[in-house]
Amino acid sequence: MIIYQRYFFNVGGKKLREKKSHKGFTLAEVVLSVGIMGVIILLISSVFISGLYNIKKSKYKIAALNIADKKLTELKNLPLCDNTIPVSDINSSIYGTDFVTGALTWGSSSPDITVQGNENINNIPYRYTIKISEYNDNPPDDPNNIKKVNIEVKWKDPQGGDKSIRTITLIARPKKTY
Image (cartoon, rainbow, N blue to C red):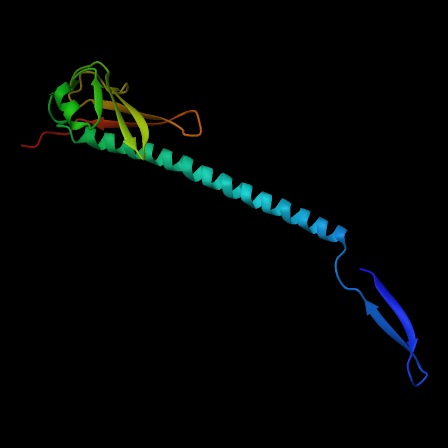
C-alpha cells in the first residue's frame, strides 16, 4: 500500500502534518488473491467430484454384494437334507435363474454344478454365476460332505469397464430332523 504525506500550516501558524492515505489493494494483489482462491476452489471441487464418483462405485458394489447374499440365502432355503436336489427345484428356488447344469447330490462325489442368471437393480443388469463343488478337504464317502459355493456377480460400470465381486463359502448337509 502506498501512503502519501502532505504538510500544511493551519491558521495558528503551527506546522501540522496531515496523513492522507489511499487505502486499498493494488491490481497485482487482487489478481494474486483471485488466483490463490481459484486454486483452492479447484482442489476442493476435485475432491468433491472424486467423492461422488466413489459413492457411485460403492453403490454398484453394494448392490452386487446384496445379490450374492440373496442368492446364497435362496440356495440355503433349498431342501438341503434331501440326498438329491433336482434341477427343477434349484431353478424354481433361485430367482432369475437362466441355466442349471445338474442336480445337487450329497454323499458321493457329485459333478460341479453351475447356476447362472440375471438380475436388474437400479437399471443396471447384473449377471451372477453360482458354482457348487465338492470341498477338497472332505472325504468323498462322507454322507455329510461339505460343498464349496462360489458366487460371482458381474456388471458393467456406467463409466466403462467390467466389474465383478466374488464370495466363497461352505455349506454342509444339515441333519434330518424327524
